[in-house]
Amino acid sequence: MDVDQFYGIEILEWPARIAEVALWLMDHQMNLRVTEAFGQRYQRLPLKKSPTIVCGNALRLDWKTILPPQRCSFVLGNPPFVGGKFQTDEQRADMNAVAGGVKDSGLLDYVTGWYFKAADYIKGTPIVVGFVSTNSITQGEQAGILWNALFQLHGVKIHFGHRTFAWESEARGKAHVHVVIIGFANFDTDNKRIYDYEAEDGRARPLGAPQPTTQRSVPARSETVTVTRVRNISPYLVEGPDRAIHNRQTPLCDVPEIGIGNKPIDDGNYLFTPEEKAEFLKREPQAREFFRRWLGSDEFINGIERWCLWLGDCPPEKLRQMPEAMKRVEAVRRFRLASKSAPTRKLAETPTRFHVENMPKSNFLLIPKVSSERRRYIPMGFIPPRTLVSDLVFVFPHATRFHFGLLSSSMHMAWVRQVCGRLKSDYRYSAKLVYNNFPWPTTVSDRQREAVEAAAQAVLDARAAFPNATLADLYDPLAMPPALRTAHERLDRAVERCYCPEPFASDRQRVEFLFALYERLTAPLAATAKPKKARRKAL
Image (cartoon, rainbow, N blue to C red):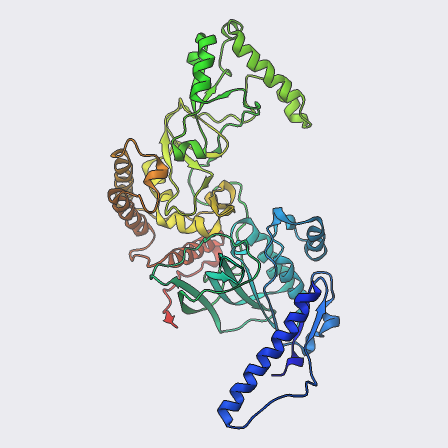
């Protein structure tokens, strides 16, 4: 190949010129190799050919005028990594220009703009595209928005996928980032490949590694790769169909619905720290019976004590005898009246009530909305009905130990890591996307159910053995007690037997099995066969 076969787009002048020089340097290095191989000096001096590097905005330029698709073989790139919520006005305008017709495109990362531009450029051609990208485009809502549009509107097929792996930044400090590389085209191929990366110490790279924040990187050399030939690659970079899941209003399987906790819209007037509660009760001792423990994700996981003054059920004659409580009620009324939202102003008519109220009459399962990606499991737990929970958690009324066991298992966590969205790098659990789409086991015998329930109780008992530890302490990867770790491993085995007699070797196998089951449950007339465990070849 010669340098004049390379065409590129770079938004800044100086990097564009550097790219040209880099291509000449690489050309020179390859010429030296030719000289060594054939024993005859080879050089291109004087330089008569040069690459074509256009300086401009790649999302605004017409790629076809730079290089007609009929003359192009490959499109390669490492587009900038900017999250959907962090784009400038100019970047949002760029995204609107290339993806404005796609529903919910405002949620997409900036890197996806290059996917839409490339998909349009390669239509009806044998061009293959390969992009380094944030792993966020294979997770959460974004996967459905991007890939369903590319599949349906552009006929894209994924040819290869390098699952989440570490790159080393060329910038000072050598910050590590985690990315994916995705290859796709406008035609199908029998040579589809998935590349799995493993850390130097032999530990598998988790499915949901942190989203990168650095724009330019080079591959880390501390990982080994395993390549698998597959029949088809899904948007989640596992074997599966050309389909990404969307929000679902009700559960896919025959399980109870979950809902968010309480949403006061009170400007903090009903929420108290222990010190604030004690000070308030000195002035208003009659209010003691109306205080309830208050839990959100942070309070539940980290053992933070907070209290809520719940006056929604307070008889009016008692409320009028508590002047300090009445001041709080009036403050809430004024706060709601000042809102720009008409529904919130309407709530000012009932200032002792919450905007959203979810208060089960019996014990319920609490599922945190946000949890650290470092944890192997999302800590969940049973809560007594007297406790009030915020809208930062999900409420699962009438949950059994079987429900708790399934949701606390590696099977469910593999699904969470692949499907859920992220808050920074932390898991952001979702009822509509994660829980409602989760494929529960279809046939569970009484013996299997009892095994899961017993293993789930063992997890609860292992936690109870450390009454002074918070869930953050218990589920820290380094501090997790061996007894709790063993209990979870036994629970994992009990849950997996509900799906398949043979154990799963990795999260990837779990996810591929769950997506195949998801396909059967959502398309029963076109049932998909159970995925076979593919042979892997280590490079």
